[in-house]
Image (tube, rainbow, N blue to C red; front, side, top):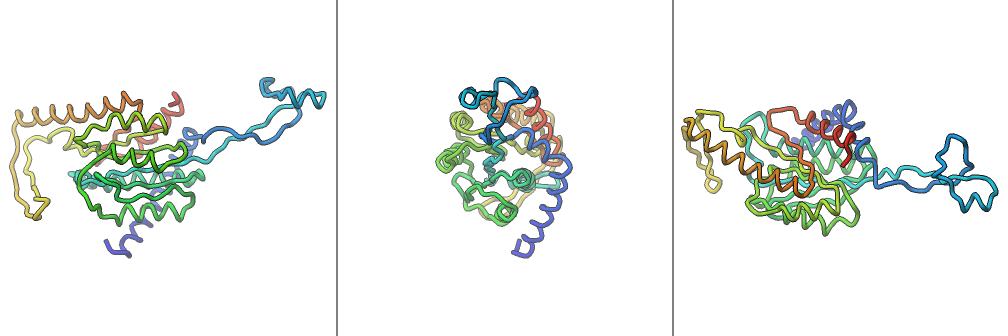
Length: 293
């Protein structure tokens, strides 16, 4: 994409995302991610409707009548989007690749954060950090994040989730909500790093998978491209034995990742290409609101 095409695509994503945020996600997002806590605002005289536990006994003793401390919610959050841009995310058997779906999800989360006056940052990673943008607030910054996601061409093809999280820990000074958006297809063990990151921050996994990566569609013709020379050739693959073996291996791989997230107490949102990606996010927000972290 050239610069003009990128700007046009950013505009399309902004319009589409804004409608979703306005209609659904902003309220759910706000109700779940309420901020770091509460901050003191003022002391005022006690009324019968107030909770007696809020009485400031020191001020009450000085004034000779009950006074309470009034607090307000400290709203501002830091939201980090960690986006896997490894070669496996370029795959897609449906209308969109995993990477394209990741950009849509990241856009929705970024504009939800901005709508709530939160700071949002971006890390694009492969087996190294391809780009890091520190968290900032404002629409202009949000649009820059989307431009970078659309324009960035990764220099590497591998995946290293542990290294990405380690880098994030070094860069973030304050507690943040981290959305790790990836297909989690990493042959290196990242389970310990999930646990460490989730203890310091609120880490949420967003796993994007293509339906073919979950279940083989039966008899199929497959076009394969050599990543080194760009040549392509076709294979015809089918048969129940192959499909069963494929499904077992896929279940094993995805199951290990689910177990790693569960042990680390990391919430995992599954999103399949070709399906509505908003519903799983809203469902997660509502479950968080109902049951807490």
